[in-house]
Length: 462
Image (tube, rainbow, N blue to C red; front, side, top):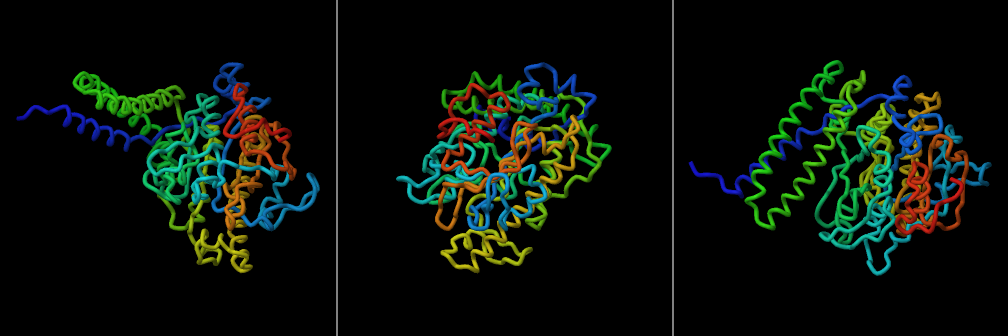
């Protein structure tokens, strides 16, 4: 029998890694129970100051993205700061008026074309949470760290998942998409660094099993324990083989191995985190079957899982892309057979404008349903979870018909544990969207961040 060469051993390790990564997913969660707050959430005064409200409840942050901008005439409210009236698009939020504020005058200048020409959908998506100029290339990807990851870097150690990334479509991670921009820009909201996006999960079943374990209610705890033991055994095996192989690699292969080991260390950190948080919650609900055929049901299911993640304190930072910018799905469930992106280039056609406004309204209805779920859920301090949360809901395009990125449609929902001032329509004139992100980061203790993206300072009075 021929002795395996280093290249064949590398192939075996790569195969082992694929099998191992395929098995990763069933992580566990601990609920926000008042009786355990002193020992867990308030493990130290520093942790409490960075990640909790003044009453000791977790302070959560989410960013929700809807595609293709909005019809300005139906999006913006009428009236003053506190006596405003919601327009037709945001009318579903009327019953939650005291928990939301509409922010006008926020811009993403780095999403404008400049010398780069076409690609406003890729820029709208990729700039939304990074605030930086994207490098226009299908292969040389350069964006920037996103604000959710900045916040997760400060508070993520306090929960089982530093952050969660959700989507309602399959993510394209390679190749060219909008006008020569990498697909990674258009299909990822969250970025660990300038070259590494945080791929979102679109399958409700996989997301649920990642958070709570596989199997039916009552068996998830034991299944999670067995899976954890298997993970640890496989990880030890892979690391042992990797150490044995390293001395036989040339310089180029060592560089590849270093990248591989970085991924392994990330997995090891996740295992240690799971072990650290101990017993997990087992929701008395069925595991989702998978991706629903209906887009509406898919959106609602992912919103429900995001709410469950906050309710169980599985994470305090999340992003949710309802669809990528440029999405051209139809909306048959509300009687619109045409593609969303095609309609958004309405060129003043009133029939097309009316249909886009109905799609905008539909997305707002789903968002309002999610907010009501959080509003109806009590937190450890007696307030609603929505009161102790900050949720940015918006799009990287303003008027998709003209591909504009100034005066973006943005809603800031939640009370931020008393740090925010909802129930208002605030007109900022013209300020970088990144200024809002600086303020949100400061509220969770990121006080050493002087600039983010194209910021010019913190956004006052949010």
